[in-house]
Image (cartoon, rainbow, N blue to C red):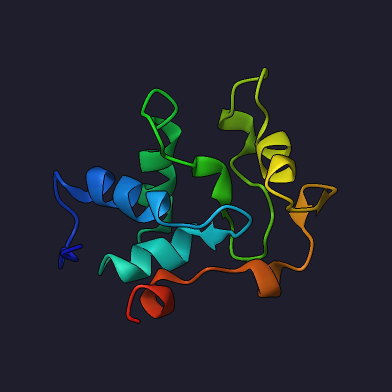
Amino acid sequence: MKKPSKLGEDFFHNVHEVVKLIPAGRVSTYGAIANYLGAKRSARMVGYALNGSFSLDNVPAHRVVNRLGILSGKHHFPPERPMEMALAEEGVTVIEDKVQNFEELFWDPAIELAL
């Protein structure tokens, strides 16, 4: 995947493409995705891109959490399929809105996609 050097009209699309690469049972962060896309200070923009992703196929937005492993975006998920439920189905344990074993489950695209 070609990494853009700045925010632009393709940024949301690129966020979706990176999120599609996060393996089931792993999580990434808004900031790690922004950094990978060359927009280090744009973690919120990654969140905005994911807010509108529910109508898209195969964008596992539930795998993206904040830098502490907290489900900060959980309020944007439909009530019939909460973020915590989607993660639990993949074997990710969440207690009080925080991913357990976050460091072990963290998927950094800058490292994982550089291989």
